[in-house]
Amino acid sequence: GQNIDQPTEMTATEGAIVQINCTYQTSGFNGLFWYQQHAGEAPTFLSYNVLDGLEEKGRFSSFLSRSKGYSYLLLKELQMKDSASYLCAAMDSNYQLIWGAGTKLIIKP
Amino acid sequence: DGGITQSPKYLFRKEGQNVTLSCEQNLNHDAMYWYRQDPGQGLRLIYYSQIVNDFQKGDIAEGYSVSREKKESFPLTVTSAQKNPTAFYLCASTTLGDTDTQYFGPGTRLTVL
Image (cartoon, rainbow over all chains, first blue to last red):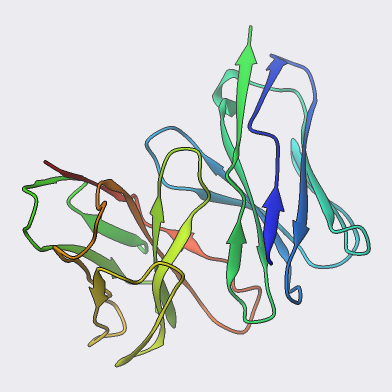
């Protein structure tokens, strides 16, 4: 079956760095997406990886290893506004997204 | 100002009533999607459409219906056959053939009393 695993909740301190891991199993693979979702709001797109390696976008970076079925989202210089859920989604061979349940990130001062 | 709109943001209905949620986009996107989000679960696909007048069932289509008469619009009807309709409903759209990144509307929170 198709499956995405990511931690349910993580806590980090303002100004620190946090890494959110995601493992996936899909029928075929056409890319890995990360979205941010604040409570009560819609998900917003953060990053897309289809090739192995690290993609950097300001304070956020995303890494992919296709051979290991593994990705992580790295958030640097954490700010209070980064408190949100982070959703990992893998695109299968039919170009459908398989979604993880999300990781709730709590930032403490 | 391009984007995806959903209305209303909050919707209350009595059990046994059908209700239609609207989704409109002016991004000229080809494909549109409806998801349902429940606490502690990933997004689940209800229906999607890649072209006007055509749509496909997702993983949890039972109790829902859609139409795609115009490229810009993809309304979702939650019928009385849906056993547990209270949820957060999200509409998304994308241009096919690139990264297929999906962009979301603000969502409609439906509560059935």
